[in-house]
Structures are given as C-alpha cells and as structure tokens.
Image (cartoon, rainbow, N blue to C red; front, side):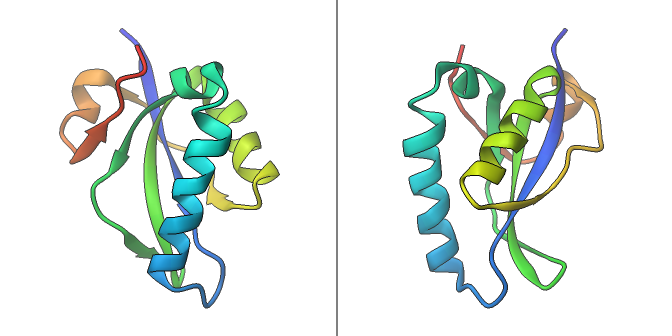
Length: 104
C-alpha cells in the first residue's frame, strides 16, 4: 500500500486568500500538470483554506517517496511550505476531507 504525507503550502505574508489561491492554481497548471512525475506525486488537496502561522495555507496529500520533489518544486515556484512530517496509509488518509486528484 502506498505511503502518503501532507505538504502545507503557505501564502506570502499579507497576501489575500484570493491572490494566494490564484497563485496556487497557476502553480498547479504550470509546474505540476506539465511534469508527469509531479502529477503522479500529487494525490489530493484539502477542501478548505486554513490559517497557519498567521498566513493562509492549503494542504496537499503527496506520495511520501515523492514529497521531496514536490517540496523542491514549491521552492522553485516561490512558495513557502511546511515540510512533510506525517506519514499515512491510503486508508488513514481517507479520514480527512480531500479532493482527490486522478493521477493514476
């Protein structure tokens, strides 16, 4: 069974939620969807924007073995993030509210 983790992408300080979500959408289109390895790494994303460390955040469910590559892409795109620290099985991950990405 595939092991998964969570990478939390953060907004810039003072950035409004709409601006942050627009940048995230562009990132997903330009960087992730154009790279099949990154698309395979991405399993899902949280349904809601949260506040973390006084910034807006979106959590992404990522294949554990590909998390470093996903984090590197976030850095190259200018996104701050909280690195992956938890590990889940696919069954455990389903306990959360994710929008699953069909990358298989």
